[in-house]
Length: 193
Image (cartoon, rainbow, N blue to C red):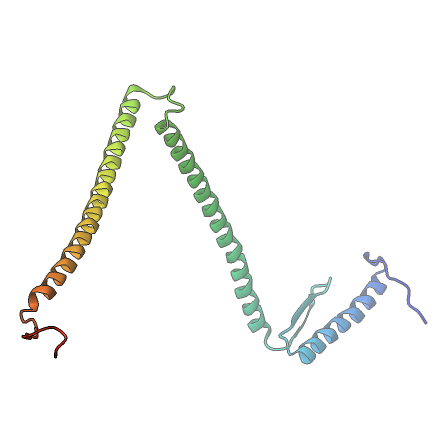
């Protein structure tokens, strides 16, 4: 025999409603027991009837399971608010960074001589001072680099001269070091030896 699909709505007949409650309650408690045994899970079910009676099942202690549930829900509730707080901080930080970038861009444009119409005399004076200081630093660095290059070139040039001089001295020393010359003195006509 095939059962038809049950429409989910309140049963109007009180006797039928009580019978259905009793059967479904027992089925629910049986399923909770099976789930706890088969899957080794901690299960707790609490059912309140329309008359105010309490029916419960727990694989361990109801109090222990309820405490565990409350701790879990507190952690779950705290995590989203912490995430919301982090999100708000990130948005605030991003807004600050965007503002800083805009200020830097505006300052860069002013240093390049663009958008100067909104500047006061004091701001223009400050920009001029900054540019003069920058130019002074650039010239100082350029002078240092040129001095280093000139010193390197002089060293290379002197190093080459020293190399030439040292090889010339060596040749001269070789020539001067020979003080005895071997000669064969022969008296008489050549070839009559």
